[in-house]
Each structure stands twice: as structure tokens, then as C-alpha cells.
Length: 281
Image (cartoon, rainbow, N blue to C red; front, top):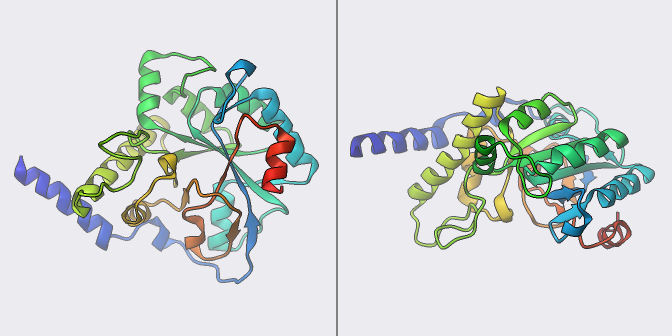
């Protein structure tokens, strides 16, 4: 048992510090020009207006958000478009903005997608693997509290409007054992790297087994992170990561600009005019 554990650890460390990931194989397009990019962070969008809160908004309010952005000439862009801009120099549309949805709520399919189609917009859904496994097994679909099943994710992955991100397999929790993906104070670097790698790869493997692709987007649970995690994510092949720091991003042709992207949380307790006035969009 000890020999097997040592072998696993050796493979992980070798992979992290010597292997070349996807990022190193892509060309880099050199240009100093940068583009301002706001990113909105949504969570649950429900058709039950009595259920709204800081991380839950009504479907009507989401529709109002999209109309506001469309009327002001904002164009949603995908992670794939950002990657092509950074690495290949392909153009982005004017007034770009990114829409992200954390946790993988079932209502993202039922309440969000129809509105994205209405306004010709795109979005990124980042799922928590353990939630998806649970609701796949129980096969429960409720727009108030359910999470996307693997069948839903497979279906949505065929839709060009939707991209998927890894939001951890089981690190989306706050407990005495760990706060999101943060390294514990007394945890060794090797133990942390092993735990973070195993969790991240578990969800990557489930994506591939169920949907035949692996995301290149990682969304930090609660925005918590450790500097040691970035090297792990780069070597696995992630090209984009989302934080919970607020602010507008500047996208250049430096690949590092796509890591720890800042986002504005869309508080469901505020109206469309209140939130966008606050964000100055």
C-alpha cells in the first residue's frame, strides 16, 4: 500500500514539474493591445420569484439583465474566443462581456438557456462534480434546488452557446477540514498538491467519461485558492481560471491574463438598474 501511494505521488510530481501541458504547446501571439473585459457571475436563476436572494435571482430579472446588455451593445464572448484572441490573435467583438454561472444548477438549463437564445448570448456553466453525481443517481429535476445531471450536461455541451468549467469535484464546501481549494495552514505542499490534483482530475475524468471532453476552464469554489494550485491547473491543461475578486479585466496576448479572471457577483436582491449602476456598465 505504501509503495503504491509513493508511486502515485511520484507520478503527480513528475507530471507537475517536468511534463508539458496544453498551454506550452500553443503558439503565443505577441501584441501589446489590450481589451477591457467585464465578467458577470450568476448562480441560480429561478422561475419562483419568492426564492430570490444574494445568489438566487428571478428569471424575469435575468431577462431584464440581458435586455439591458443587448440594448447597450454588449456582446458575449466564450472562453474559446478569449483563448483564440490571446494565443492566435483572432479578433473579439466590440464591447465584449462574459456570462458565468457557478455550481451547475438545473435551472441554468430550464430558465437561463431560453433567455440566452432569445438574446443570442453565450455563457459558461461551471459544475461541482459531487452534486452532479448525486442528482444523476437520484434523477431529481427541480428548478428550485436541483443540479444538472450528466445527461443534461452532455446535451448542453452540444449547444454552441454553452461551455463548461470544472468547479471542483468535492472542494465546494467550507469546513474545518478545508475552505474551498485553499491549502490548509499545517498541510504539507505534497499533501496539498496530491489532494488538489486528485479532486480536479476526478471531475475531468468524469467529464470525459460522460461527455467525451475535458474542460479547459477552472472556477475556484468561493474564489478561495492557493498559489500552489496554479501550477497544477496549468500542467493539467487549464487555460482559463475564474476568481471571485471584483473588477474589470484587461485581456492582452499574454496567456497569464486568462488566469484568476475577476468577476462581478450578480446579487439577486438588486434590480437590473441598481446592479449595473453599481458596476458602471
